[in-house]
Image (cartoon, rainbow over all chains, first blue to last red; front, side, top):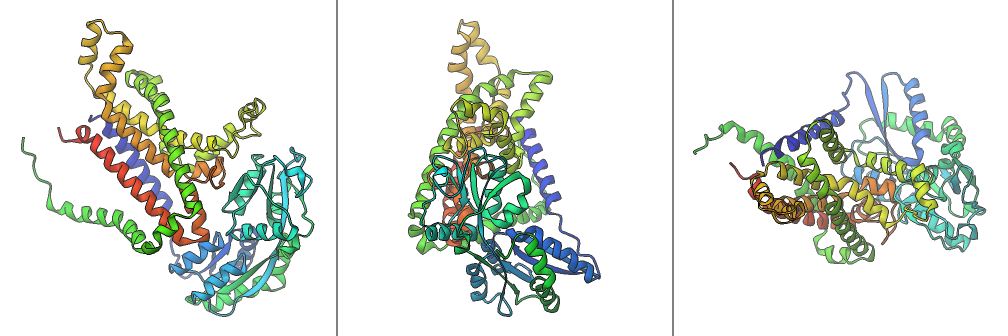
Length: 253
Length: 263
């Protein structure tokens, strides 16, 4: 049975090598200040743009983003993750963070987002909207409990319709990729996601989408050692330039 | 033969290794809301995820045995380039990042891809089905069975098989009565490992099969969702997975004790 060892050993070595390369800590450059921003996944391209502009305006400052589901970010903050700014995709998760005493000042709403229906390019299943054209077709939505899923549920209730999805995803980006790849015939995502997908999807606006509007809130993390920089970043987001970039991405609907 | 004792300074890295491996598990178990465990685990979503996982993993293990055993038998006899290529091919899914496995499956079997489209046209629509879960699990789990059994076969002397063949036993009889019984412990431990790997399958399922309660949302996917919704439920379900994993590892160790014992 000794021959089994080399295969196992090789696998172990490979795994170790993979772990080591993937977990190498980002070297903390001397003389540079790191501003860590925890932001909801849907803010990804927008906040990255603002981060680059912030860095340009503040020499010596590096803005590091962690984009994830809002609830996951709150969990990380609770566990003591070193963040300076937190931007949530809904009120519920910001409330959770505030209640836990993690947020310094009172968080401010800086934008909104609404849902839309998307189909793969060319709309191969001939979907016409949230109607009977979805019968027997593969609709993918966000799961109830995550911000986009809660909004979807609220919207369906407001419109008086019952959705029969084939999959309920944890992340809105997972809904998007399933529609982009054509695995799903249709999906319900944020307007900003539809916009980010570009020509890979067709967008079918939902009449009455404003009945389930997600409010995005931003706040400074209480434990932050860079409070003034954090305040400046919040000011950038809530200010004219930030609003302009957000609007261009489809936010504010 | 008396083996020389290990140097004492080894104890230091050993202690570090034990701490490194034990701390995360202990930390997780310390956070579990034990008093609410029965209530959390009897929620319909949790129960459905549990049974779906058990069902799909059982089918996965069965498929792995049916397809993986013949492959292991052939590979154990193989020499040269083709055998090496076959061995590499059947090992790669083991070390592949799960999301890559999912992407590969999606591109091969996706509804808008050539092969998947052809299947769909023939009435076999795999998208978002339990079958897709089993396919994803089998893709990553079968290699564990193949590697385990192949290794055992290679290190088993041919004497008994040769004797049986000399006495007039047909190849099938030799296989059934001699070769396979000799590696039965490795088959059992390989099957247990495949089951364990299938149980933990996450990335390929999420990418390829989707996530719907009772249909495709297995235990790891339910944990992934609950991490966003209710951390306590995620922790409770983690206890279930850790328990099953511990049992499977113990079973595997028992079966392969002979194989791994000192010479």
